[in-house]
Amino acid sequence: MSPPPRPRTVSPIQHASQMFNDALSIGPAVMLCSVSGGKDAASCAQLAVEARKRHPGLQLGAVF
Image 1 (cartoon, one colour):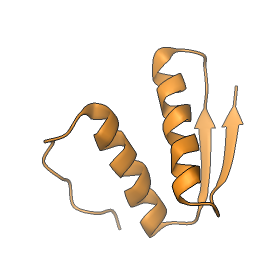
Image 2 (cartoon, rainbow, N blue to C red; image 1 turned 180 degrees about the vertical axis):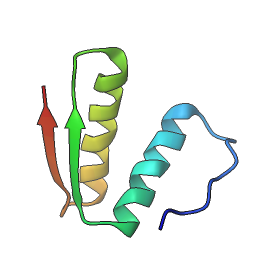
Image 3 (tube, rainbow, N blue to C red; image 1 turned 90 degrees about the horizontal axis):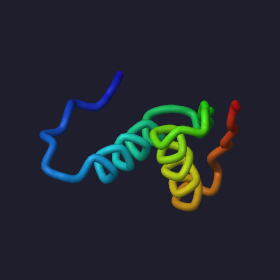
Image 4 (cartoon, rainbow, N blue to C red; image 1 turned 60 degrees about the horizontal axis):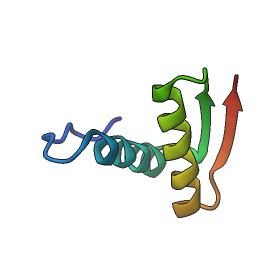
């Protein structure tokens, strides 16, 4: 079950970071990022790395 949607009152990066936190709070601490080399993928990968700093048990993988 996903958390209820929040009104968007923060920046897109802050919103995406909060979505990572929400996902980690309701599911297993495993995340797979698809990285194509574009700006969106690079931002997503960076957010995943930052999430891992906050959640040391997170298993993080990347697919290129």
